[in-house]
Image 1 (cartoon, rainbow, N blue to C red):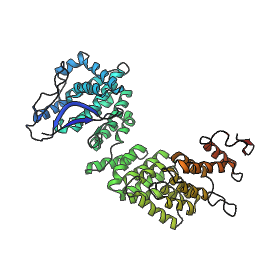
Image 2 (cartoon, rainbow, N blue to C red; image 1 turned 90 degrees about the vertical axis):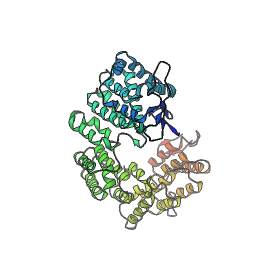
Image 3 (cartoon, helix red, strand yellow; image 1 turned 180 degrees about the horizontal axis):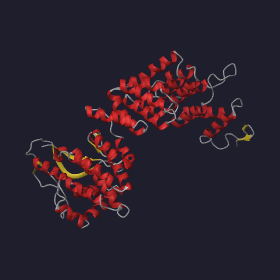
Length: 477
């Protein structure tokens, strides 16, 4: 009979943490047994050997029961606090073996996890700091474990998340913030546990507790993906409308709405951005939502229309998506053919990190706007090692032509050279060093450009490389 060991990863602990030594049989038959390794000699197993699956599922509903005498005893004799402090100590020291052993005793059943939450509701976090941190670690492990072992625990993980959400308004503010951060980080087998199943609960929390509503906004951050039913669509529509000036709420709503109805919501997103030209956070949130969630072709066209110089993060996210390179190239070529929207062209080029060198150097050479050309040079030099021959081509773009004028606007040449120094070695690095030295020594360039090049070059050059070199009235070395 095959079996798998329950595994959960806790944020911050190296590697995978094995929570519980129980083995879960893959058979679905109700009479199948669950083997459980015993705890220490002084501790009883979490469940008895050969316990029927049906009985386990019945026990999984214990989260709905009031405090049992066993839980009350655990709280009264101080054992719970002691175990929680052990959890924190093991977690801090990265002792996975000890952490597993203690967590087995704390979260082997939903009822025991409930005891931890009940304790948190009655504790002074300033006096019980280590135990509080251990409690949050244990609750994270419990939610993840129950969610990964649904055959054994049923919906106990979901129930525990609901109970923690209900408890949030009752927690002291500092402990509430840490609990929210814990919920954001819990991972199950299908990704973040805090997903669309809890959207209405979080929206209700915001509505019922307006004074704390802003503290609950981070809970919405992971709630994106396919909208599964009309009620969820209504929730996200309301979220988009009511949170029209809250960057995070807008991003959360758009992340789902754009994936299911881009025809309707892309124009609304662009219109919202145009209505708030000075709100950088809101504009950034809208751009990022479009980049990640709208269909690639539609996202590429939309981002090029609303492009601003500050949107590198959104265009990088777009560029990482399958098919985005081809979509960006097509949109760039259309804009170039009409000599339109240089900022849009520039930002599209910033997303072309997968494009061939010769294409990007061609853009650097031929685009009529020097800002676009510089971005192409920065993209090709900033994505990884560059061949020495490519450095020569880039250097020639910024060299003086036969008329004494540079073939491209010179500003930015030092940035391109430094990109090569940071990411390349050997002949390419030496070529970039020579290029920076040339800029520093070139009296035809502006003082600002030469001093900028010197600031970049001196960390790569031996002392004395610029002895006697004057820039304006300043002697460099």
